[in-house]
Length: 438
Image (cartoon, rainbow, N blue to C red; front, side):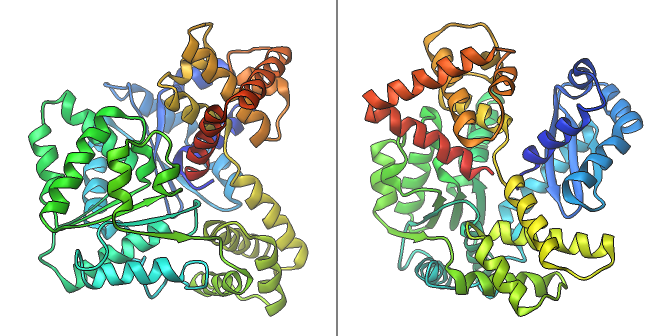
């Protein structure tokens, strides 16, 4: 669990133990997680023009939400619920931070732990930062979630801003690029949108794979890419997979992404994981034995983000229990972290619906259109293979369907996968999108 949306989904699940489904729907159906930073979860009710829901949530539910956060993180956490005006101001300030890369000011090359699995990507990123648009343009860094791609993006941006203050730098996530484009079209502000993205010296796009399948977004990014490239400006992209594996990416974009340097990041080896554990522990003031460092490195193998989450969990245990960190404590923390980083049912439904251009509500409805039926069956299948939850619970997420319907859906997807390699690739693509957002 590394996103505000995932944390909020877990909070709602905990609140559901004491609140009725009607109460959950009434007060939280349009309540979205805006941000998660330090020990604060930021929320906002989208359809709340008079701030009525805001006032009720603050007065009646702030403490239950804090209690739920404490259960999730094993430590004190606070919640901030924004009014409409506060939300607009907050988004404006966050956008400014992200655009300038100051949001990731602590992510530098010096703080990036280098090992055999990421040495090439690190060297390529450093070369680009030291000589933008002179060596590798575009630079395309790819690898699984939590391995340090975003860290390298921020490191490039921070070094460029330090050594070339006059450079115009811009960081954006692929999903945010799409959302900004939609907003610009709706408000008739395309001129400002294009000026923002086509008049920079350094453009860094995180998780570019999320523009795949979005026709208008790909069209706009194609022209943005060409404008910057032709002007000799540096472009750096990250993705959870190489361009050739982004299935719904247009060929003209794929060839441009592949025209520069491709650099992959693999999961860190044992020695690198030990170094990362030691660095993160020192960073957060946690002292462990050498055996403990090795034990953690042996058991947390997938990504750096999990290691950092584990260290924070151990700090919470130490502070709350006021005792030494034992092997039993580490085992408990490892189990909770691995469970925490599993995708939520809501995330699976969201990414599946998005892939098939339907809504999550469509998945829960009685609609029998072809795309909706396929999306619903795929969503059930992915919950079955990615989550350890009962068939009845899977059905409940999809409009209260019974276990026999879930079984049939899973079988239909498996049957289709056995007949079509293209459908197998579709399932892989959706799973990759889900994994990238954990």
